[in-house]
Image (tube, rainbow over all chains, first blue to last red; front, top):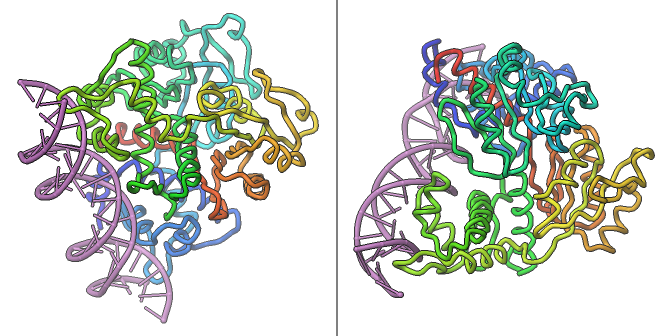
Length: 221
Length: 221
DNA sequence: GCATGTGAATGGATTCACAGCT
DNA sequence: AGCTGTGAATCCATTCACATGC
């Protein structure tokens, strides 16, 4: 109910909850664009096929922000989530690997916007170094990592290199001094516990669908 | 909320389990390349920082495949998983959106290999139609969807278009007759329950890291 | 002896249900 | 009345611990 509680609860927020907060935030931006002033947990729940109690619990993690009998104030809640997610200022990102995926992420709106700014791409290929992405992000050699990270205060690294190069790249990023890494290479990395790592395995999702399809074929699903 | 589990003849397998099976499979391929003949749940557990009982439970979903006192036969288990995941034959995939992300996915090794084959990319941009990706995947207009899906027996669609086009593309893919969709657009789709949908939200992962970083800054994590 | 397979115990996340505020 | 905030109940996933079989 009071300020102490906000601090206490914070380190207990699960990734599942945090992920949903991101989704709510996007929805609030949309509602704001419609000039909707308040929203109830039931309305949000209907949009996402979630349970309304879950949404209230998620939002209550950081204090009481709703008004009983009314709901949540859209723009107030939005600002609040932005602050809680730590994207109320721009965080610098560097992408290792200027291949297809790295380039796509560099130019991806969701990545280079609204709380995140991509400082540079990194690559080993001399043919790529010195060029820029479609939206103007420069491709630099790995020898520049440490300098860029320090000069531009880069906090997040993204690994978008083939699996066999991922560990070396991981080690180089960690050595450069950044604090969090998003890994797209399908490998189990030997990690440094001081750096937060989140891995995303794109192929798993295709295999999940294949598994579902097989179930349908076998007539068991 | 409903579609999160997949029925099999033996039991019900959660998506979490299925995802881990994919990871084990990749590891088994690696062990096979080292000519290792057997592997224990404890060894796999150590590799992935998982609990060995969890691995045994995951693998036991489809029957008893290990040998007590010995472990699992690497190549036998690998073949078994490939069959259970339904990638023992090539499944055809079509990608909607020949932008950066679509192109990256089309040429991504993990997507166009080993159980999956990308039949085509789709786009609305006349400048892109008729071209091919770096690895030779053709870009076709949406008017060809139904024909391609039928002729080539495409089962899986991937949505790699901007958020505002995603619903229309989803509807077109569903209408074309395929059975499963992997969605990369950050929107809540109005779905047809006959088609399995899996959504991947890339931005959530960045926000997760931002949330972690904020926790560190505030000294609460 | 050693590692699997699995019922029982634990731990988390979700949902229920209602007290409490507007 | 309407909707939040939350303890209690439920559901699901993970882990423990051991009987079972090589």
